[in-house]
Image 1 (tube, rainbow, N blue to C red):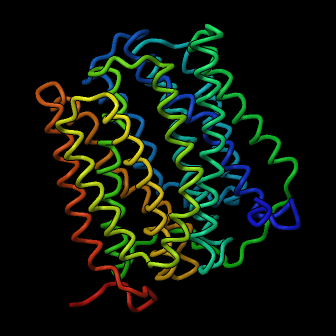
Image 2 (cartoon, helix red, strand yellow):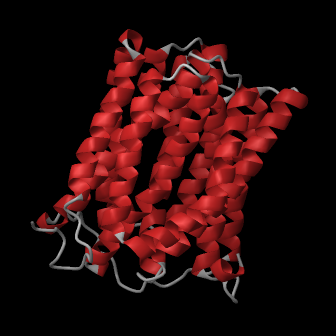
Length: 391
């Protein structure tokens, strides 16, 4: 941790670390409870959940608007404002247990989450040197996972032992995120930008492979985010406390392995790392389609989530090929591209789920195969002018 923080605590790295730990208090609470809350308190079925998750992704699709908000605020300020919105939306979730109430709170927290993620990615790529970026990003993921361990542990204790209402847990998690955002705004100076960022939308032909990998990542991720957890509740009857324990184990593995994954990407390079990820995901999604054991389903969930850390390779691939002034606007555009399929897939696949849950996961395996074919085009040493591997 000392290597991550450095000697000066009021530094960009420490702010990245603090923001990485703030976000999971809201998102961890929301992810741990939302499946049980919607089923038990709002009477949701798979189709309702698909619609809700599609609405959650609309702000992600509109992430390109970040470039216009940068005319009003610097990226650092916008990141903290977004964290504040995430916290408020999460805190309100348990007090509006209806379809339309959950639509409102979900969109509010989603605006905060997606705009924070967009700006945070841009800040990481600007503030971290190319050589150190994979390792530091791995450590930031581990720090976020450590915060998530605390969240899921508290969710389990408060629900299973403390007998608190889920609404109270949403309130506590969201309030912590909002409080950290406010403290960060007061305690940290405004850090100067190394390169002035373009304040317009950027779409460059030479970034087409990055856009394609990002699109497929968004499509594939929705299968996991929306339906893997729902499978645990609907098929295996997991309680909210059991879901929290599963998430707790999940994050514990991330704490241990995410920094190692960052080192692996730095050692292997983006091409080999992405290919390993996609081969693994093909196997995991295929197994999801036919799993009948709750224990095996939990193991698949943990393995699946570990592969998320390897998405660092997509970010560092772009960092190596990008014009430095393109980073902020391209972060917004890439998040929008990432969410094109994400807006459609949850609702459409929610209907498919009613017919065949296995078909949903087999579609995820097909998406992983398409991603594998794209990853083969990533050069061994990406650089401006050498964005795509030929032959």
